[in-house]
Image (cartoon, rainbow, N blue to C red; front, side, top):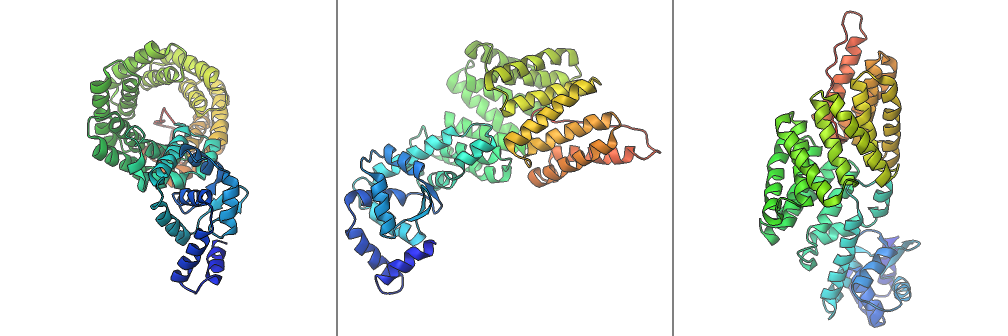
Length: 444
C-alpha cells in the first residue's frame, strides 16, 4: 500500500510530517543525479497509476539519457515510489509534493515540464474521433495525467499544442458516451484558447466546433448553432473557402439544421462540403463517405428514397473498403441503409443490416453506449412495423433504459424511445389502430 511508503519513511525519522520530510531529505542525498531527475519527472504526473511506457515517453521527450529502469528500482527501494503492478507505479501525495519542490531546483525543470507535456500531447493525438473500447482501454491510464497537463501545466504547452490535451479528453469521454464528463473539458478548451490565443485563431475555431459537437450530442441544438457559425466564420476568414476544416464546419452545421428539421438550409451546405472534400481528398476517402451519408440523410428526411439509396450504398462500400469491417462508421452506414429499407417496407432487407449494426456497435463501443440505444430502438421499430410486438417491446425497453441513463430524460433520442414504447403498448390494445410517427436520429 502507498501508506507503507510513509510508514517506512517515518521509521527513519521522528513521527509527523516534519519527520517524513527529514527522512525524504536523507534519502534524497543518497540518490544519484539520474535517479533524482527521474523522481522530479515522476512528480509531474497526477496522483494516479503511472504506466512505465508513459514515463519512457516523457523521459524521451525531455531528452533524458540514462538507465531509467535502474533509477526506478532505486526510487522504489528508497520508498519514494511504489510499484503497483508490473510496469505500473504511483507516487504518494506527500512524496509528490516534496519531489516537486526538488524539481523546481533543477536546471532542467522547464525541460522536464515541456517533455512531460509533449508526451501527453502525443497521447491525446492518438485518441481517434470515434474511439472504440480498445482505444478507450489503451488511453485510460493516461487520462489523469492528460488532465494534469490541461489543468496544471498549460504554460509549458506550445500555442500549437494548447488545444490538444482538451481535445483528447473530450474525445475520450465523448467516445464513451459520457457527454457530461466531456463537457467541462470542452468548455475549458474554449476558455483557455480564447484567453491565450485571441478570438481569431484556428484552435479557437476547433474549440468552438468541439464544444458545439458536445451540445449536439446532448440534444442542445440551440446552444450548438452559434458556436458552429462562429467556427465556420473563423475558418473561412483564416483558411479561405477551399479547406478541409471549412468542409468540416459546413458538414456539422448542416447536420444540426437537419436535426432541427430546417431542410432548406441543409442541402447547399452538405453539397458544398462534399465538393470540397472530393476536390481535396479524391473520390475515395472516409470524409467523402461521411458527406455522402449526410446528403443521403437529407434526402431520406425529405422522403426522396430513390435519391438516398445509391448514396447510402456507395458510402457503405467505401467505408468498408477504407476502414475495414471493425469501425463505428461502418455500423452507422449499415444502420442508415437499413433505415431506408425499413421506410420502404423492405423488412427482410433491413433486418440483417440492423442486427449487424447492433452487434458491431455493442462490440466496438460497449453495451451501454448511446449508439447502442439508437440501434436497439431502430431494430425494435422494424419489428414494431411488422406487428412483432413481443420482439419489439424488450428492445424498446433496453433502448429507453440506456438513453435515460446516458443521455437524460429530456434528450430527443430518449423522448423518441419513450414515445415508441408507449405507442407499441397502446397499439397492442384492440381499441386502437396502429399509428406510429417515428423520428430516428440519422447519425449515431
